Image (cartoon, rainbow, N blue to C red):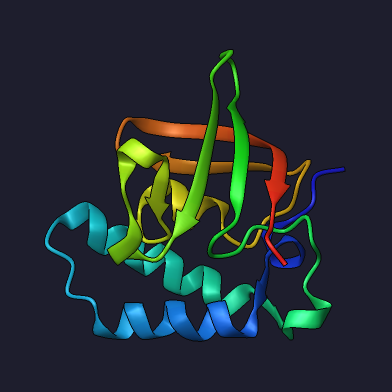
Length: 133
């Protein structure tokens, strides 16, 4: 059975608040950023928002380190989802406002996420989620 995004997406209250403030304050420069922001806004509306202590340890939040496999390939990426000002591609730190960051936030280990990337639609399997306590 395929779970729907509605029941899959879970966010910590502090992350939800932070993301909402970015969306309200950010003036994206490219059409793609704008489209990503619109999608993220819709995701935030659907997300189940929980207190820090109720947040599952295998769910992706800001500062989570994640290992994902791209469907149909042997590509496994390890990235850390960060706030935009901490993003550094060379260090594997990806902004939550970037397409892959937006795609993964709120999902859990073992779930698959399909997302429209600049290079086309991709499906990712979340192999591992590491959250510092």
